[in-house]
Length: 291
Length: 337
Image (cartoon, rainbow over all chains, first blue to last red):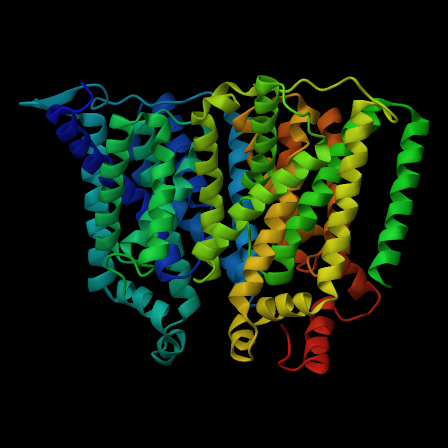
């Protein structure tokens, strides 16, 4: 039997759950690419870095991976601010961000990946936690906790980020820097400082997303590459920098991917995101909730 | 210098290199040289789009692999039906056409938008093509495909020498094409897109058409560089053919050498390619990729115009960039194709 209702419902639900996780993975890029206009293609590498740090904390100290990644967030924030400073001084200031800035991030992606390979090898790593393993059963539904927990924490994080961006002074300044840097300067706010903070936050989300990733699936250094297409597909489909749009797009992609892997086999799933990306670019480049 | 003269000089140099390599009589030279020459072709191809137009292509590996896999598909067809055995130049032509078409399609879908979308789409293209190849059993799927390389070929002798010669000719052709573009109306159009696309569009440069020409030429050359690869390697596997090292190398080489002229990718590829060959033998292949990554980041930060730019500043000359821009303004105000 190829088609069954049970299978369909389960695929849709797990797609929505995975979509919640994709939202966490993408929210950082929505911030950097969507709002700040920095094409940070190294973002997946930072997510993998987050996964490995969570793994190290979990394997040596037995700490919960999500807790460990929250503790690690300030570290990622500092790392992100530092990277933005280098990026600003060497590329944005000279007006060379399009070609060399992209190459810079590509180099970072490559360095991070190869360093992780050299240090940890190419074996798959995984973490241990109480919620990995058991799952909840409702009627015909089957919800593994290892996906439910990251999904919920991720939605909380995305909602928090959205509230921060729309309600707080700093968040509004970040939204403003995307629109008019000069106006911001006239309000006596340093746009570079705001951008540095925003990029730091964007990288900090990678720490948490990395923990989610290693909870959901075993991780090896090149896993991040599969996420590049996904992240940018979601970011573009959601409408570049709109966090609610990102969540909707993430769940949509999650559902389509999950249906594809249920009915056609998991080896086809990576192609879905690319189809999404091309379709969006061809039909509606502004995305679902684009400005 | 006119293009035929330029081409003749380079053919002369190639003949000399080939003669010396034969004189040394060590097949390792051919194996290592093939890889370096392949990078010369890939770097030059990347630079036609990346350096001249300023559009970054992260999918070099995808275009390269397309060429390689079209060869595998044809090889399978031939062995299955005992068809006419195509010579490698013909396979390269087919690989080039396939990659050129894909390059055109990618460009058409993404180049109408901001440049970053093209870069991201090329990155995703590599993943998707890999998915397709992994799922395509006819060309070996994830198990990989074996190609049996003939031992000898008539006038030249050992087959690797033949492959080396072909790759050298492709590298020379790529350099000649790059130089020809640089000094043509097409090249000035490309440079105007790189310097200020909005201004170019406003003064009547058909930017989309030019960008599509650049992606097609660049993709086709990468496909041609990939087509003989199955014969070189003997066993083709998706994860290594689509590997990130082709992408990072074909970006790093032009950026380290200098992107504004044909010399840059050549210098970058010869330097970095040889360095990698030495590092792979003496240290390890993972470390040599790390070296490339660090060199790329250091060069884009410290020497934005690459080695060529460093030489220019050393001799107290203005970087090529400004010369090019002034040349456009002086020679053909608003008349670029």
